[in-house]
Image (cartoon, rainbow, N blue to C red):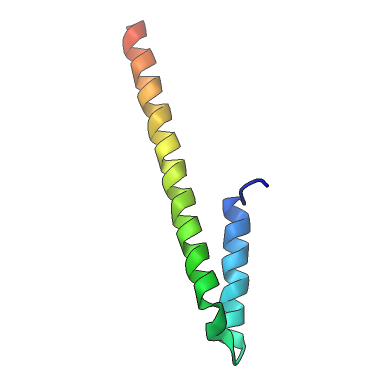
Length: 66
């Protein structure tokens, strides 16, 4: 099963937030909200790591060409 995109995660957390605030039993969904927050943070960290790796590779290639 493919991993959800950042847009899908943001849509999901918005939906769960509405459930939490709009239902009498909304606190039941707090663990799901917290898990989605963790997934969003992990996604951002992964993207940041990939961008850092690209930058380092680019800089290495530029130095080798100089």
